[in-house]
Image 1 (tube, rainbow, N blue to C red):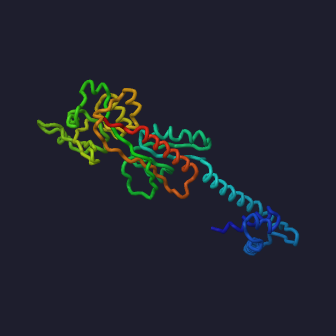
Image 2: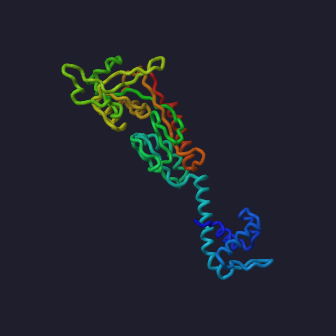
Image 3: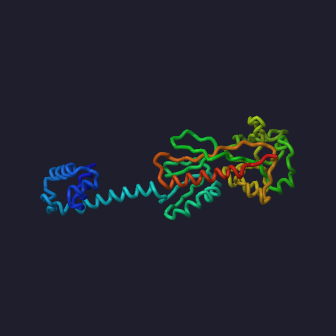
Length: 320
């Protein structure tokens, strides 16, 4: 590719009407500016400027060349201004990837940011599958649980506590379990990725109980995890659908406390065995880089961090 710098220097010289003035604007010495213009003329084989001790004037070739060089100079300035705007002001499209159900958290976290910066737009891509963040042009990704190896920068936002829930109608029909061992006789709802693949013949052996295909992890007083083998009757790949089926009284489910706090307060769901401690899962925010983040990413990450910090402090599940 040709070196476009001489054309920009030439345009600045014509615009400033002197080598010295152009040199000051460009942060160069007058001799360096003069050498660049002379080299440009020698390469083109035509004179671009008439020089005198007091002023410069365009030749005919220079007059024809100058408008093109001016557009190049203006394009460079516009490019610089756009980069400075991206660095200093939250503008353009902010693309966020999050698991299904996280719209309830992203919206309140970033609503103040969108209100403050009217030139900022947001696209929220919700999917429990791990989408390709580069192909989807993602600026920020929210992830729950252990993270796969990646070149993206991960920042911890907090822990997502989980609780066992059931609808009042389910408990009225099936009774409330009084101990962890009683959980095995209940209907369970689970995410497909948590359920072990089984053949139809192995699911219900002759004369026996259904073979467990789902492990409910609990946490003892020393922080050790203890699994309880259960049989998931209904499975789904969608966290939102899991909560909705639980609200409809189909069975018991393990849900994120932050997602069901208001539902519990309204009485649409009831905590099952509230004294039973369940593990929490790390919530992280992924960004491509930390050192050269545009303003839109900086303000969004700050808002998300503040929101989830307050969520962890105010919405931590209590144990009986």
